[in-house]
Amino acid sequence: MRTLRKFLIVLSLSPCANAQTLTITHATVIDTVTGATQPDSTIVIDGNRIASVSRSATLKPKAGQVIDAKGQYLIPGLWDMHTHVYFDSTAADGADLVLPLFLANGVTGVRDMGSALDPVLHARDEITAHRLLGPRMIVSGPMLDGPKSHYKAAIAIATPEDGRKAVDMLKTRGVDFIKVQSGIPREAYFAIADESKKVGIPFEGHVPDAIRASEAIAAHQRTFEHLIGIFEASSPDETKYLTGKKTVGMFLDTYDPTREAAIINLIAKDHVWQCPTLYWERGQWLVDSIDYTKDPDLAYAPHTWVDKHWPAAQKGIMKSLDTDPLPVREKFVTHELDIVRKLHTAGVPFLAGTDTPAGVDVLPGISLHLELQRFVAAGFTPLQALQTATLNPAIFYNKRNDYGTVQPGRIADLVLLEANPLDDIANTRKIAGVIADGRYLSHQDLEQLRTKLKQLAATR
Image (cartoon, rainbow, N blue to C red; front, side, top):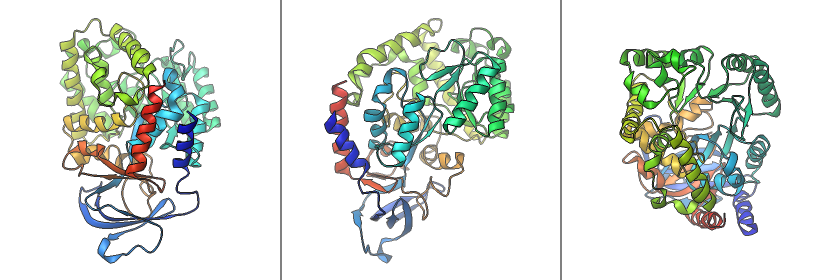
């Protein structure tokens, strides 16, 4: 353990905190806005910002480290917009395993949607100071959930006053946004929305069970996670679902395309961002068909996850699926992809997120690449899928001058790939190097990091 921590500290501090010059030559730069490619480019990085992007023939490196990226493709660093780094049973693995795994897979930024407050705030600050190896973090702290929440990384909310106090406390502690969970009581939800507006902090997350999607839109909830609320709004039984039982079989049996079109139009009109977590959703509804023992990346999962957490999660999820046979749930997974396709056609903006490491066989970093493949399965082009993890997060945070494209002035969060992701989105996994806040992790560094992480996983 000490050896791994020392290795992670060395990587997080290299190059040193002083401004460095890093030059990438002969790379093909991918424009995440248009999909155009700029071959044989030289990218000069000064400190943690891109200083210039030009043709390699017109610029010769004068100082600093030089990387020959001939035959490689340069994209902005990837964002996973739905993570839980310090979450319940996997929280102990957050700093040493989860965070480094993101970087090892080209994920240079995450939106954390529910973690223990003190550890996640500490990690965010330590990463910023280059004392901890991991992606930059946008965090909510603990989720706001109902009075009987079974999550450790949550604050139980029973009354409107509980909701207001939680928002005020989290705002004071310095979180970046408020995350709402499914169990929040109806009146408490509206109090949370009102208090968030008063103190000037966005609120995002689930459409709670007691709330209609249209009401969440009117309350200015900034994101919908997992497509929750859309299924309900596409049924004439939406009001019944506010207080009663609901299953995917019920959604399919009462599906009304006219109602679906109406809620999609409303979402598009109000520009409500969607983070559908499609890879996680597939595992949720088909959890009894997952054979994670055949996962080629299983070596990155601690034994406690494989032998304890995942089997328990499978059993827990199955309890809620006992009324819907597997063929019905398979049909629903296809239905989800169709909803995403329709939302996308309507101009609704999307973010790539995975819910990692919550769930079954959803590995940090790795699952983001599988999520992009699910977007392509839903009808996105490879460029559009790539945008959900690069350009779109920059737009979402109003940070296009910092992230999302490979341009002068942008923060140097970048990924070098061995193949073009616009030809095949699966090529995002063919990582040759990662630049995180101007610090370069070479292919050799990444291989050493992956080896260390596998060794750590084998001991836990």
